[in-house]
Amino acid sequence: MGSVIRILTFSFSMISASSVVAQMDDEDGDRRLPIQQELTAPGPHGLLRGTLSLPVADGAPPDGVPVVLIVPGSGPTNRDGNSPLGISAAPYALLAEALAERGIPSVRIDKRGMFGSADAIPDANEVTITAYGDDVLAWARAIRERLPTTEGGTRCVLPLGHSEGGLVVLAAIARLPDPCGLILVSTPGRPLGTVLREQLHANPANAPILNEADEAITTLERGEQVNANTLNPALQPLFAPEVQGYLIDAFAYDPAALIAETRVPVLIVQGMSDLQVGEADARRLADSAPEVILSLVPDVNHVLKSVSSHDTAANLAAYADPDLPIAQNVVVTVTQFLEQIDE
Image (tube, rainbow, N blue to C red; front, side, top):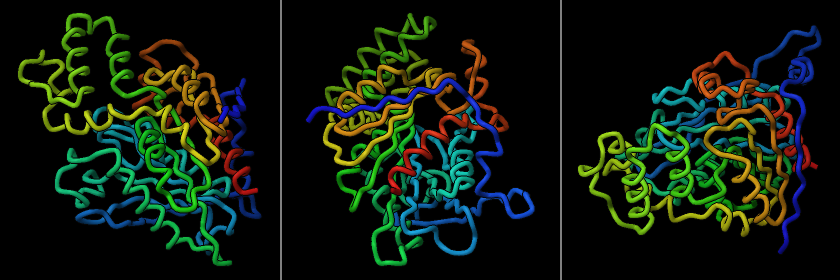
């Protein structure tokens, strides 16, 4: 089946705050904050935990309103989109708040074995893409139980995968009962081994270790373990023995092949100032999808912040700035797509 691609590009980076929060203003014009509630889902050994963001406290949203399930990216990324590895931009928390201000509920989650979901499995490194997909299904069931429809139908739970989370939801969507759509944000369009090679080669400082790194990636792509003790110390954390099983599993997936099998509307959102995932990845995904909207947003980086400078240091500084608002063109794009799902 040939792809049906609609491409949206935006020439603005921010919209007026009054338009964003219009649905959350009371009669006196005072802004009401979204309601944040703890939500749990069953995990293999203990509970998975996340945060439900609701536009209003009294009652469930209307039956036709979808619930966005925000699936985190790689590594120790928590439900807000932060990481102890130096990321405190809180992109998922800010996105959830912005969606709630527009009347759209969402759930953002901690991955199994980490943070609030630490009890779900004994070892956070003993994971696979399929296992993360199992959690997506568990969360969809929990959301539908928490927010049932009044007419007995099935609530639309729409996964939004960010970065590596996009691979997780692509692999899981075929198993999700009654799927209604999919959103991929900053999602690699090539196998992760290929993306990792490119990221390492993009930094000139890595030149002395590139041959070792390339060999290690190739070995993992063959499904074989690497002796991390023989690697340059700079590479040992990246290819630590405890994560190699996950890397072998993740490297085996081709996102473009997965999206070719999707049978739901897909929105691809790609920031044009993203240092980790680029336009080529987004276009590869779009070219492979049966039904897709491709949104290329200028001046937006990997953590969904507006960065007008082309300076790499300024871009990376946004990763640690929770006070920098989320790029509103991302919010607009996602909201418009969800409104089409609701129709």
